[in-house]
Image (cartoon, rainbow, N blue to C red; front, side, top):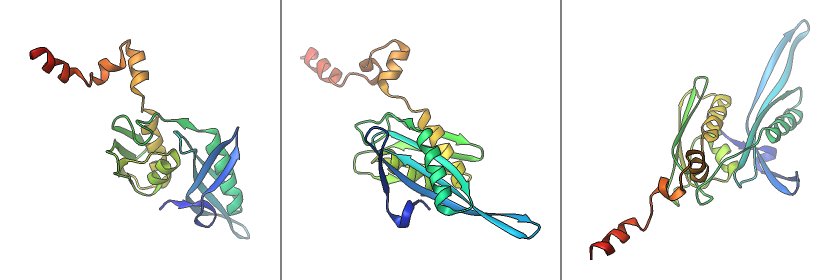
Length: 190
């Protein structure tokens, strides 16, 4: 289950030119290395960082202490941030699938007021990204690392209608269809 870092609260930092970044601790795992004198314990953390305006990144870090592992993961997440185009600032433009290893996710755009319908690690990604309405389903692996990476694979495939239109040499209205086309047809028939 996705947990916010530092006792359940979001940590907001004012870095990188005034962007307020919110980091969410997705999972923390204690790992052991067996040595001659016994076991040496370390902690592995998975963190998602976002500005809630369309930029999000994830990172993993490992250290002997929990705060150090979280700091390493947060630094990696800030370096790997991507921008995701959003429709009306609340949902995706179209449905998309992503896959990483045995983890597979389906992410669907949703109507206003739907909220975030997603489980655990995927919810942390969408909350950090700033998406308000989305329906997502995880298929396959329930490993948090694979789920986050599959979600990012899906989000990287998202494109705005403007970028698709420019790539195809068309107008945005040609791709989406004109909204007043049926009305214009009715006026022409009268």
